Image 1 (cartoon, rainbow, N blue to C red):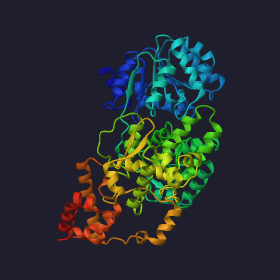
Image 2 (image 1 turned 45 degrees about the horizontal axis):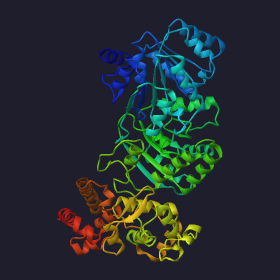
Image 3 (image 1 turned 180 degrees about the horizontal axis):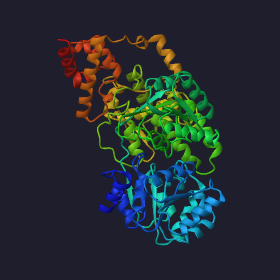
Length: 602
């Protein structure tokens, strides 16, 4: 490791290793197979580049990024590392030059595309030299369960048979436990070192927002960050072109990037962004892999991606310098429908798995659960923190449902009247009044709960039922996820306690609410004293949430704190008149909030 440290200092100028780099390099030096999963920006490439300089053998790097291989090789050459690439962009003379250099042992690293292994000729080229290791980048592409399966990667399973005794190191930023197992199996890795980095990146601030019309919301987010580097992801190429033009007209240094553009134009966008000549790239998922820029301050999604793997990889391109960065997801139900249509038409294998991944992404967007916790647990790691302090949910910024207690009672009534024998999907079916064959067969079309929440989508109701599970009003039992009321749920159903629900009501329900509820009126703006009080109450809420080991929104919502700051209640009776303060929360937290209000208003 001392020799590796010296190599890293000499060629890259780094004085220390990032988490798990030391262990990954040790596996490479020892000639041991390895699977290395490090989040984007975790320094994966150094894990195979530095050990290659301590060997007199060739390290073959397999990468799908043909367009970036030249950049990678140029950077290595500038650091004094003998490297080359071999792909379809080379003419016959250059291809012969590289092959001859391989035979003469001139290179420590050679970059190739997986397609090279589809024919036997490249294996014969490698037979002319001593191969020390294979480093496979974006290794999730070999798995059917991954988010970006590529048939050419399947050929890499031959490496252990064709080159017995040569170590294979697989690298990826996004792999669930199932994908990790599949990578090991498909590559035939023998007793590999499996190294999985921490997926919690606290400098990334996650937020999910239900999208309005057009691109105005996205434009406003970009405009709030003048001169900052950012990426905006869209699903359709036409949206990329339209949004980039809108930003350019507003004087923002933006450029488009998608697969429908000419190669030279895409390269120009990438180079200008890397050089700082462009602040914002508006792109499809075609953009981002291999981007060598650490100061990206925001990643916006103008629409929802099709999986949490894609989302984690794309947002992971922000804040690689460790400084705070914003990741804002704009979503709508039409995103789900569009992706569902695209996936159903184009996926020939594992369709159910791909649609499940899409549903998990939609649940991430619509369910007010700690965003960091959801991502960390999705990738198979335990969450041992009370709150992340870096997402809209834990910071109490999510939208509350008007009369959330009333909605909760309807949901709980649906669970109770169906006999507490079903999962959330069936309960939602009854509540929305769907007279399906199974509902009629069980006689539930005649219960009071049937059709009691007709204005809402089943997806929204399922999300709220899950919130009631998180808040302890419901529990999930058995193999089929049956919902049952808890003691707290029974008290909420009987009106003895209240709970908050989070997320937007459907437009139909919202119109009905606005017609009858005073709560739908716009909030009055806070004066200077009110703003100061609001921030003090937010700090108190954060402190209490840490003590209780719960997200901030479960203490009080932002809306409740704003109303406290506006009304400035000084007695328990006055505090009870604030939206979102019931008797239970008054007893639990009332004294501390009243004390804070009195102290600040002395």
